[in-house]
Image (cartoon, rainbow, N blue to C red; front, side, top):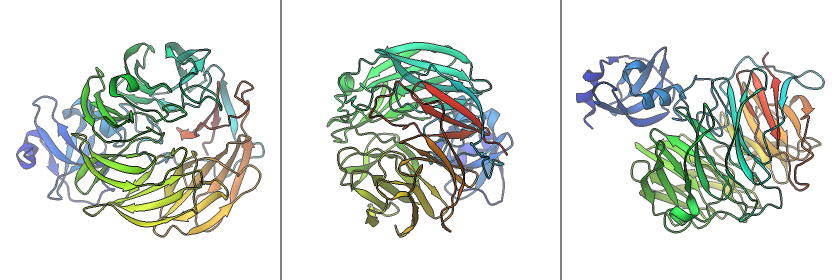
Length: 481
């Protein structure tokens, strides 16, 4: 694409200023003419998107001039996952896939007993699927009997908007010793939901009514190979593509047309088991790529073709689950079962390990990066604060209610959900030391949950509300200051 030749056609004006870190490079299309610009989105300014081209110049372009997909991408904060407001939570780990809520002005301390509960919805079904929130609606998936169901809930009062059967989940073909049901969160894009069922059905659902649009089965259509606990990743939507990892040794990662389900490309990565992490959407070294963690390696593939760009070895055991974190040309990876973590430098011609240790062995609760530090639960040390650049542990805290679980970040605080008993603790996200600002126990909790299962669905804070799930129960709390 000839960038400079295309810019005048879009009527862009040059602006000289300092902007936020670029979110992602892509080819932007003018809806009326079809002409394009190849550049990085650096932010939004009112109803305009700021785009930096390779020369370093930054242009401001009216959103109304761009294609519907480009507008959706810009409004989602660069994730491509939402065509709703900037405050939506349209995919697992949020707009930038980092577990950070954009909310500000939240409670700095919780009263005794925790923040006010606004409502509980009790028909979400069994499973550990995460929830997304778009346009005042919450979407998630669950299993009732042998039926896979999608539900839509009004976030204002917890009332059900719709509930639809979208497939089957017989609880067979994958390990259900900790309970069956969907594991990954759905993803929202341009009025549709995309979700991956445990047996490998990738399902596209109309978000307004819940009707199924199309379905693809990863094992049968791509010779995919699930991990022992079934498929659990959350689909990535980027522009016109939905990207997932079937695993196996023929098409380890695939990109499908999100409208039709037709194949765009199949990456010949020999993945083996698909495992459970979600694909990252990144711009690194001028290349738009997708990064996926498998059991024995991490891989980056070209976003346009699926061609493999690089691999870095990983000594995963039993199951690798947490989604990696990409920042400033570096990638943090962690796994449980005694494996540990490492930081990989991706800025050169080939990946290079910066450090590797066992200070943070994160099983499946996720890790967040805040400033120059990482926060997450270790399999043995409780909540851990780790230096990004060195891997050195700064502090750890393990006590009742803070043993192991999920971590979410919002407005300077960590929202820590203990998997064993559902305790939620508000913790300062600082390397200066552990400080709690209140806690409460999630209520109600499911009596239908498998006795070996725990409170594993990750918390989400968006729009001044904290959303928590335990199986069929989704509870909403007011955390606005």
